Picture: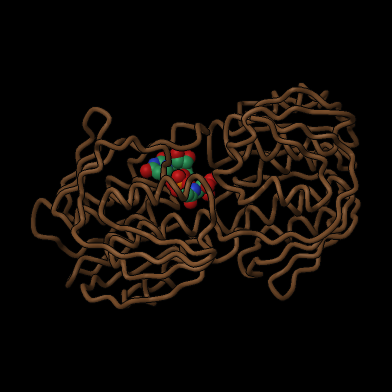
Amino acid sequence: MNATIKGRNEIKGEVKVGGAKNAALPLLAALVVNPNVTLLNLPDLTDIKEMLNLLQKSGINHKRKENVTSFSAHDLNGDLSAIPSKIRASILLLGPLAVKNGEAILSYPGGCSIGKRPIDIHIQGLKAMGFDVKIEENFLRAKISHKLREARIRLPFPSVGATEHLMITAAMLEKTTTYISNCAREPEIVELQKFLNSMGAGIKGAGTANIKIEGRSNFSTVDFKIMGDRIEAGTYVILSLINNGEIVINGVEESSLNYVNFLREIGANLIVENSKIVVRPSKIKGFHLETAPYPGFPTDLQPQMGVLALVAEGHSKIVENIFENRLGHVEELKKMGANISVERNKEIKISGSQRLNGANVVGKDLRETATITLAATIAEGKSVVKNFDILYRGYEKVNDKLKGLGVDITLKD
Ligand code: UD1
């Protein structure tokens, strides 16, 4: 699907963000622990549909009525090898399904092509917990091979997915305590602990570098509301800032918005209160930004910040430290006339106060497509964003929301 966007419209109004994709995916994997759950605010996204499809194939069914999704299960099936995995988060099912079934087989995880994205940290962690894990041609196989033992695992890097995967798996290992250090500390991990503990798990420490998990086997029925998407919110903040707009973003928890301080330091006029962000017209100064694991600046907002750098006053430098291939947006922005240089495939330099021209651009991954869509809103004339539907992986009802904020956008299949 392509989107035609006519740039330089007035941006104003209110928008409500959906449930956080990156919180919802691990919560869905955690349904293997206990499927008797009702989730509120599960976002309607293609990545979520992929996970629901995997769950269905493993025996966990869902019923959705508006914003409420209820789950139930009968017999669980751990062999998902017949289903190609389009999302990286599918790996979160490996350990949990192996605990439930004795063995789990998954096709190798897919996802955005933003770097090598290996899974060694997941696998080392499962092995340390007593699983036998094998990477076969296109498949991953995990088995509980010998008596499970108390495990002390130090992650070589604070991987978000590996922290979540090991937390969910360990929560189900009755009479076993697992200690994980150098954990990722993202708000989505705190959300996962909150969810698992609400059903009776014994997890402490999420949000810090050390997490302790006491495995249990009895879990209770719960209703749980998923936090708002901080990256979706940040993308709309940037939309407003680059257009000198005035918007209100609803539905985000203040405690998850660690990037707000950085934006304020570079001149953004933001009010954050009562689960909303008010963005006022602002004068943005050139900046030096480096992505880092939480509480550092999120890599999922790095490409979008490139557009802010284009309109800022003065020079900017942006360094991507998490993924080795997340600068794909640069070539597309250049098609719109942007003057950007890239060094060592991780560092971009942008001079400010630039004007863009409409062009035909194509998105190859989620945040790249968000970035070129943002750029199209400030470009002079018409742009065509090819593969616009990639955005439905992570931005709920994005077309309607952009229109509601004043963007002149039309979609064509
Ligand atoms: C999650 C988010 C993604 C975000 C990323 C970093 C979800 C569904 N996705 O992805 O949007 O960009 O965190 O904040 O929550 N790594 C390894 N070996 C591993 C695992 C990771 O080398 O076993 C590397 C990756 O290649 C990458 C870095 O660690 O360079 C960070 O990856 P990780 O934190 O695991 O990201 P994801 O959980 O995949």
